[in-house]
Image 1 (cartoon, one colour):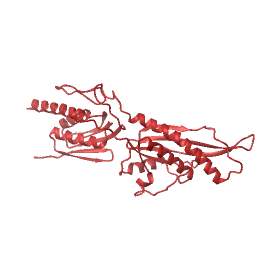
Image 2 (cartoon, rainbow, N blue to C red):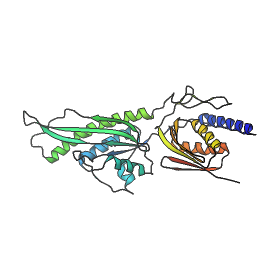
Image 3 (cartoon, rainbow, N blue to C red):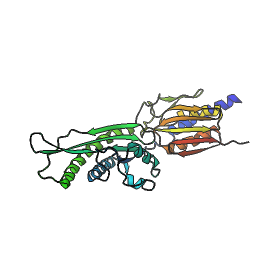
Length: 315
């Protein structure tokens, strides 16, 4: 009987792998959801609410939006639980706000800073504005850096004689908008490279003892997987050691799987750091199918970036 059950499990695993990889047409991975946020904790940076800041954030958002990304306004999605128009915020606060937004779930936060000033020539009364805008991309769930870029050292036209504060804000704002477009184009190109479909991300086959090896996505014959590389925490509660081992084999055969790492393990619980290019909906569906093929009654809960699989004990 144990041999028969093991053979049945191996056959089910192979069937599930084939079904997940080749069952039906391939689903296009949606592009990541993005929120653009300004870090102005440095007293020398342009604060949030300033017209220069507003022109820069609008240009960054519009450029990424035109490149096909779903860009959301921070105030619109976070006004229900955080105070709007707060200034001098550090990156820790920005990341916490982005993680707290659940409708819609945010994947990437584009953080930028603006440094603007005007310097007078040492040899004449010519005054030139100076603008520097660094930007970076962070994975909201994992905190992984996805790229950074900075535009600085650009020779800007001198300010006209008698340029007052209004003139200074308009001139510097116009120059900052142009520079912001360059920063946005570079960051978007970096993000395109991250989410581009890849081949060869995996060894090429999902080998199950006693079965024919099934090609996995990303291998030589499999379909390339696109989408943002995302990490999830997968917890197994109440499963036996044999069931945990079977679940680990199943998860390694899922489409767009990258790799996983055990975080903790015990007699009745196990936890994994699981990296994949699948979205949360597909991964949740695969986990439920996994329990069905394992004939293990259980429930799947999901929140944030954590999946909890709980074994339902029966008589």
